[in-house]
Image (cartoon, rainbow, N blue to C red; front, side):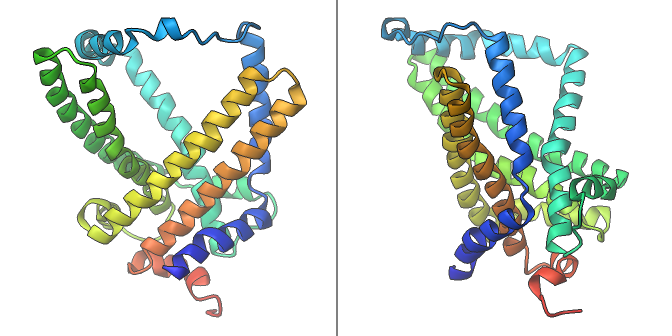
Length: 295
């Protein structure tokens, strides 16, 4: 446990500063600030307590009675495929590409222009494998969510109480850490240079079949989700939406979101290496990390 804590704190912070991987995110945050203040009305959103009365009842009615038909209409529209393809492309940018970069870091291969070299190192079969892994975790989460929705909707139909909506949200949230772990591990296993297609899938399924991988991943990614909600979403959103001074809100948002997000990405990679260290395919890939004195 002490070794894991050191890996997630000291080692992650050291490598984060060494490779300066979060500075590029600041420019993205500035661009987001410009978009928000250019397209949104200048007037700040009003928080009227009276408008929240009955909101739970209305929301529950919408989710359980109206939303199912809208979802069916949406998934039968060909444009849904375009949206799904766009989301997967975004996933590659924010997951597979950085994983390739951090793979090179932990193999002592990263040099100047590391991001470009990491992009060039990605192969088409790795992208295809990532598609299969992501489809798997989406299928698992989708099945869990549909079953929980069916159960809580049955309760809602018998007793129109908004508590069923809260129960649904809680049940879906319980599975969220495993969902994030699946998205994280898929890219990290995809960029491995060795291993057959099926062998990598077997490693990926350890998330569901190996109790140690399952429970430790659930705890770690639960903490990551809570940290991202606070530092990457809530604080930057409040700063960007409710502060007038441009430089002040950018500084607050930048110092909250960018180092925390980059740190969590780095810590997630090291947590993956720690969790999968007992499996040969991973330990052989990262010998330079596990055994620094090895040739």
